[in-house]
Length: 287
Figure 1 (cartoon, rainbow, N blue to C red):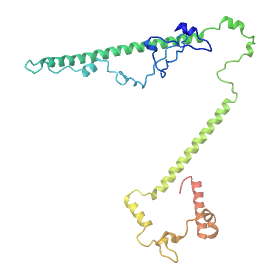
Figure 2 (figure 1 turned 30 degrees about the vertical axis):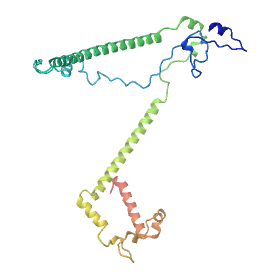
Figure 3 (figure 1 turned 90 degrees about the vertical axis):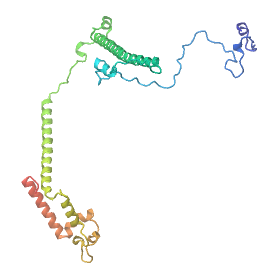
Figure 4 (figure 1 turned 180 degrees about the vertical axis):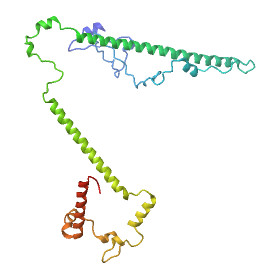
């Protein structure tokens, strides 16, 4: 095959036939055409593994510090309460003896496995801690090492006064004044919040007289607002008080604004409300 491959030209191609069974392939095979291989080998490709492995469970979690101790091992692998003996009159004494041996072997394997795994875990943690400490020490040595002589000699000449100065905090001549203003604003905000809280508590206390606290009061209020039959509050000059729409449409913003210009009663109510607010401002509490 090598001699035939070397005798090929651009115009004529000659295909040799070998007697090896590995070359006797059909046209559908990718090895039907002999492609020369490169001399330098390629890196082997890693086979693609389908699926993912589950996350291994933590055998010694932080919440169970008693696992490697003797009390846990004794509780996990309890010994039989009574001495087990093979019954010679049973149908299969060899099988019974084999079961006893397997049970004892399982208990022994569990004890030894937990001890070995715990020792392996401690050794792995010790190696990890030592490696981390070595990395930290190496980093500190690199950070604290002096400047190399070649870097110092080849560095551009700069006056020491022109180099940037390392200052932890920039100078601030008005610091005390700004702190005083900030503290004053904070105190004013706290006082305002406290005044609003006291006013809300006073209003809550004054309105507590009309709170409904029992089922009897609730039933009485429902009967007053929604009485059986005719409601006197819904009565007008032409219709009995059987429908709330007898009082007219709900008030709009425009009607509420112009209410004082059309109705003397509304003007009187507004004046009384203003007098009440004036009294609350003078006394410092809700009335």
